[in-house]
Length: 169
Length: 292
Image (cartoon, rainbow over all chains, first blue to last red; front, side, top):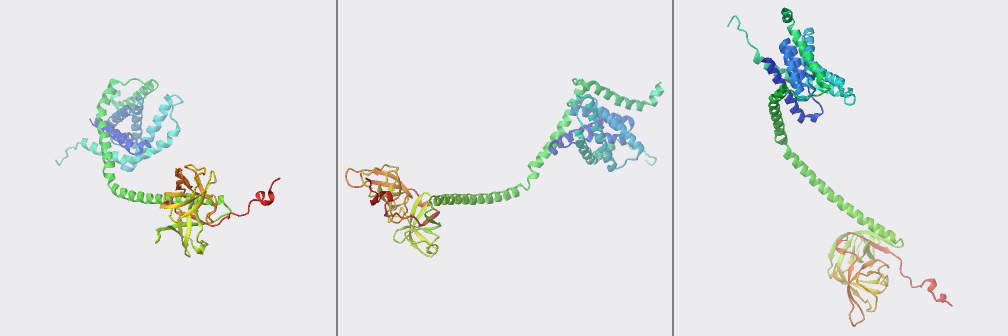
């Protein structure tokens, strides 16, 4: 249930991002809010819930963006695993580190998508390193927007938190 | 085996979630396939969410841009309106200056056509009907600048009139359409002589003393003859109109449309010196040049 809620929130965020970016920026830059969601799953969810949520988010992303099947699903789960690895090595708390991880996650998604698409596309149309500045801008914009996603997902998670009855109750 | 699966179930799940999409990607990347039923179902479920979010955001931003962001539009419109008025005024001034420059250029060009004449440029500063009924233009040049009575006043199109009275800094010009004005002219085409006399109307004069036997038609250009001692030769005066050749009498009856509309003149040139017609005939036509 929580994983479904996460996927729906991610879907809403992706739709919101698409609608806002239509008005703001005119397509000059983009934001990868899905990366923020996956980083959140990696930091706050368990392996099962988090990986399912990440896969669901990636699947929805594949559908709404028209990307080749499995591309974002794989990359989101990969980002989830990477975030788990980072979270196991260092203690990540607060909006600042979350923003940093989100920016790096957005970069991972972009670079991964570029490499995989490049591998499977014909050389004439394959994306190249020319996209790198745009990816860096997207990573920075994602990091800037991540505190909003952090706040939203925190509130969503609070809805599912069940308080254990203590001894004094 | 089951215990092993239970022990590593999370690792297996994550591995499956990693590898299956990757396999699907490589399977479909080169050969894009139709969407599956699951895909279509998910899209069917997610489209309303996307649409609702997009509609909300678009509506909110549209409302912001259409109403809230326009709260200073009135002040901006007022400021721009003032700026437009100022620019219009400036444009009018520039157009007036351009017209003046064009007129002055034509005057200068006219002056350069007759280098033997000396011109003094003047600006019309007044128009008046004199106490005796004279139609006068007042120009801003007078005796201090060398203007004297009876000097011809012209523009590039032709004769304006002659200097009637002079003060130190101004001069009154009697226009050619005044009743008291009479200018000796020739028909440019046939060299026939006549006089142009004013009728008191700016758009019409009368042709006097044109012999009935002269070759003259409507539209003929009349130029100064130089025989009146006032105007230099060859300056346009007007064109013949309403020509009436009566069955008796010595002279033709005709009107003249002045070459210059004296009601629109702003800058003029006073001819302060010009070539005077000499009495002596050219040497080839002199008394000692009679042929055998």
